Length: 453
Image (cartoon, rainbow, N blue to C red):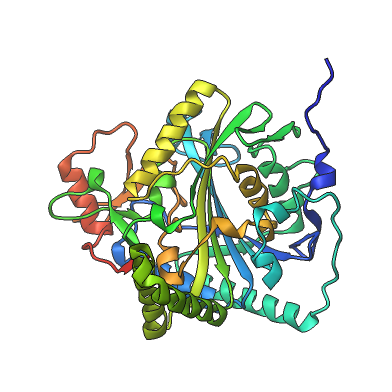
């Protein structure tokens, strides 16, 4: 039987032209600066610290020019713990501690940030104009040298602002992006969904299923205001580790981050349009809705929402942007994939979001999440909001930083101040331990809340 399915080579459709000067250049002329992000350790951040991280993101993003795309990509992969004992002197207790966790599975976290300079036309592009659908790719020249220089200056300012806080950024090199003879680069890791030295496998991008080798993927999106919660905040109270006298805080997006125990990638996009143009377009839309309000109650309601958006933009000076968030999760077993699909939906529900399993634009969204290819993002999958509320959907912590293992949390005795390392995977967390821990590293709850609509 003849195979009638449409196949092509990855090389012919690959959207990346080259990697030069530690930047990714797409075949459409977009230039992307790539960074590795180091976040604070989970369960060690107070509500004030979350607010400070949120403020740093907001200040840094305000320095970026129009038609810039911020793409934050968090990888969460199930791995087996490998103790670091080679070439180091360890005491008997230290060595025993390391070996105790040997080969124990855990969810590892890798965080990347991509800042893409694109054009106004590319920012408005829809899914039917994606490079994945084009028959020919025609490179375009980058003529605006001053614009490029200003972009890299703002990227340097962005990096400086973030590194002054508790979030650390490190520029990725060409070897980090494209790899070497002995290590896989970030692009190759994305097309295998693995950090191991595996060979590239068949890639299936269909309406019903996305498949990489034997790994089958499901996609959930937050791309419509109807799917969003009425209010958001920088942090949430984690009830499992909180007491009546002290609160343990996590970031608002933690349910789809470290709290989601499966292999997945959480993509966070912010699209910086020309805010003045957006507001003028909304003003025109509000006038049209006003003239049609007497014919339809829906028009009247929409006019009220648009005017509320415009009032907040003008009174607070908040820039109008577009945003999108999605979760790619995968498994090699179809039965397990059904459970993973339900887990992702439950995680989104914990954020008071409406879970939406996306199959229409799944292939295009996977393609646009290629590092350096955010310019291919379909604009119809984004929604208008402001920078501060959208940043609440950024994950703000990692599983461990400079810890002895990913299974423990660093504590301190509240009387002597001596450091203590507690294995949260084995020890039943009693109220006394939780109370002592929170007295040292967690402050009172509070926090800013903002209306998305």
